[in-house]
Image 1 (spheres, rainbow, N blue to C red):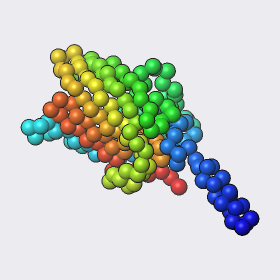
Image 2: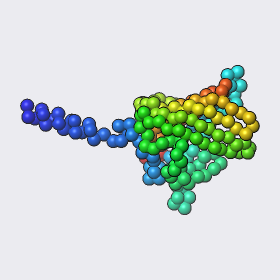
Image 3: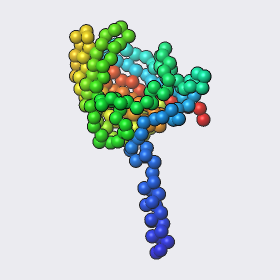
Image 4: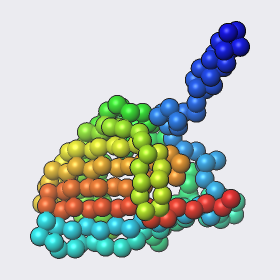
Length: 197
């Protein structure tokens, strides 16, 4: 009987010592979490309710080293990894770290596109779940984060929008985005993730 109690106690202690990612609380990635050669590839498609395809393609990002400093390539841009992992001091961030199911916050963003159009987003964000999610690149534990709000731009466009982001801590990025903006549906899904062994 005593050995059974010790075994039960040991199992309880071990189960209580799960890692933060297993318990559904995730801290923001740091530079040390990235490595040269790490690569993400997404496919994306945006279609209007009438069936007009407005975007269709692939997006690739990769970690490289220049003079010993880590960078991430995004299309034709090369951005220091230190920029993407620095704390967002905004009171309305895209991700409100640490991530945890049930957390709610306000996300606001002002932007300028490559053609000079300016715009803004204002959304309420909520983490709905942390569970296994499957995309073309594989199955990952992921947070489902729902953003609901409005978007507008300097060309007179205004729409309600809803976004569902699946963020997977194991890949330090989103694995799927489903966005509805007025009569436009945009889906982006991770189709490849790799890192050196």
